[in-house]
Image (cartoon, rainbow, N blue to C red; front, side, top):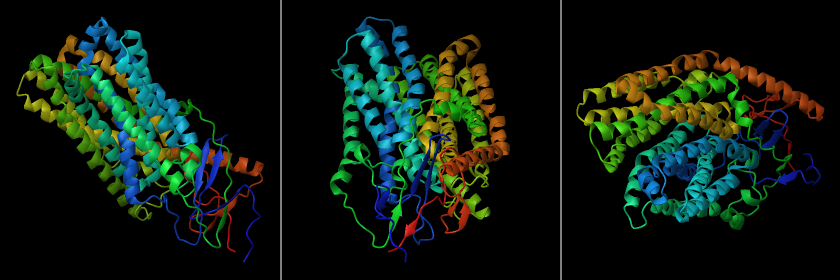
Length: 556
């Protein structure tokens, strides 16, 4: 037996398997390398299934605030305009600025979350959100409303990107669809229930301010839970969860309950490099990647259709069926139910198809797939997407001409449920695929997704009522249907060429990584997760897991 290496700042006693963190700022590679300690496989995460579910629930609750704050505001727009002595058009400007920040803010927060961990950014964003709502509840000027709504958006909108990153941290690709489906279900149900909450709260003695007091209280409660309990999951900070976090990355419970344990005879050398510098423009670079950009554009087209449907539905239900604001809000319940069901069902379907395809490709149940560029990831994920696009397109077309026919109100409500199921299923598929392509920059790639779809969605929602007034519901939604169908050739291109583009990106980053390792005097070969002597691979994405980095394990 060889003796342990001499003590140094880079030697850490491990209580379990410890990944080495390789942070390459030049090529933007943050690779987590599992370390072999005699077990045949290193776990992707040390968090138990129940702990992963709790983490997913916390991420979902955090992400709820973005759509909740957006839609709870709508029923009170007229009352706010009256109290602040401005026009409704002026109040609508606060909606526009909210959406602009909703697209831009995640670029910054997502980059910080990928560089410094999820937990600090959760605490920072929810704190901004809480104090913005406190100010909104107390202010009595239009300028205050405008600025604080922008702050509210800056704090809440990033939670969706960070939540997706959190799920990617703890869920392997074979189960990622299930967790992402649950996450999306929670996020998508908020737009359906928020107007009802907003309308009911505005009837209290606090008036429209009650909505902001509610968001303030709910945000403060969540902030407390996150501060006390939420563990750090960022893989560049804690690896698979076995590296003890430090400072603000450590939860209050961990701070008081952590007990260092030493495993006899096991010492691992872990090189701790400085954090990668946060780069808010990183998501622009991600958008420029062919395999990612084409998925983002397809998702943006579908998301624009989603916004056109929800905006047009509100105005037409009030006009055609002469419904009150509260009743129009209640009509969104079938949509919320369809969205939630679609996210959950499609999420499970994605996992089932991924495991099925992995078995056919000799990858077992798919849990061992670590961004191998030779694994046909696109084919494994895209088996059912064509049916969903067809359902959404057909439903949208029928939906538009239904209002022209003036038939029973039950028909558009059923169509809205089907549309919600299909369109949210598509969102879940595309979000899972994007995270698979950039697993270690999942917050940044989600921010890129948010930027593209929010800008396209804002444009669609801004013109849809004018188009309806000009050419009618039927032809308007025929155009929307055509726009949704434009996503099909984009998705076909991803299916046919995505793996080739991904492999080219892999090889480019691999060469850059090798050159830098040579410059640093590091060996180019190491043991992989199965104990085999192989050349150190690069990453399937700028931040993908690398099986088998340079870690030395010596027994006493």
